[in-house]
Length: 266
Image 1 (tube, rainbow, N blue to C red):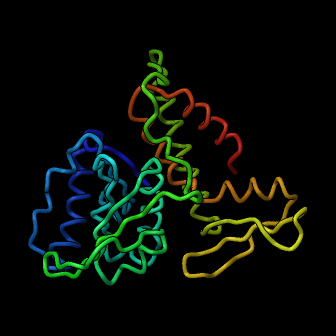
Image 2: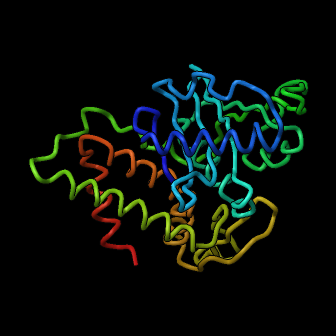
């Protein structure tokens, strides 16, 4: 998963994101609308996407800053990459970027149930946009939300790398992000929760959005809670933080985290 503001995107990345959105919304869905609306350029806008391995984008969303709320939009997945859970992972990462504030979106009506899996709820009457029925939806922050993403480290927490050091540290950060995402991709997905009949030795179970469950681990109470807390849901915001830290002056916290992570990952 990649995460960047517009100023951090390369020309190839801009082309890939725009092409995917045009392919899905304009060509496939036959919507004649102003795709380039100016909001991609806003300094607070965050773009999230998966690469397709050929220089393009497989799936993407963007997160807008509307002041007291955030807005998730431009949710698109290439036809050849659907059914892989990419959009769900992007939505989860986008929610984690929103710092515990309400999130709005305009959902195509047939996807209302899908967005409800992420605790979005209809917030008004339906409407038709570009010939497609939509419903407004809103998500209020809850106690069960993942922690606010550390994707935007405080400027005072950063340092300028010494001469000759930068390339090695930035490679370290990118490598840690890649390894973390790879581990999450082969880990049991879902919302991990500790429970079971024995409080002293709980079972950690992964709950999927469609209601299925899968056993993950069994451990002592404290360890079980730790395993549940470190579910794959944390991978996207943490990897986004590491990749963002690789775009500028070194964040010591990100560097320390990357080194500790690489020392522990298989």
